[in-house]
Length: 137
Image 1 (cartoon, rainbow, N blue to C red):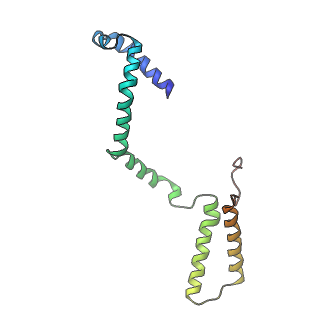
Image 2 (cartoon, helix red, strand yellow):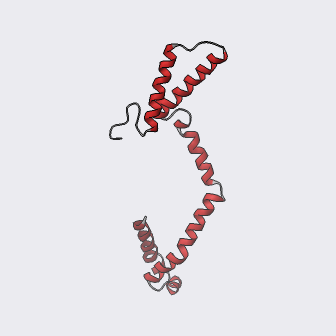
Image 3 (cartoon, rainbow, N blue to C red):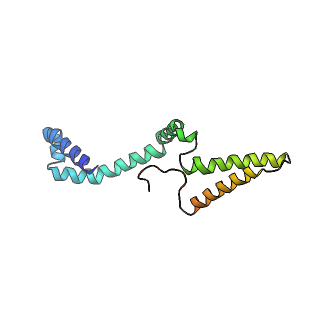
């Protein structure tokens, strides 16, 4: 960003301002131009950015679009969400339905809950479940 700012200031001064005599009276030297840009330009750019973010609604529209096109808003995230959290929700839902219907829990269901509980404890302690991407740990 810094190099880009220097490039823009140099280009605008030496290609535009240097060629227009009326602007040379306002900015007689390159240093005056830089100080003016820093004192006046930066607050204007910050204000314009704030207006863009808060008042115009462009930022919120961009966020709405990014939410709509993000595939992970419609499926579980890979990793702990896919391997532990959503399977736990699914098992709890199945067991609640069994409880409502006054059915007994099977030994297989109890084992599955024990496995999910172990995975949750691993996550709580800062570990990982499943196969993390190469280079992640």
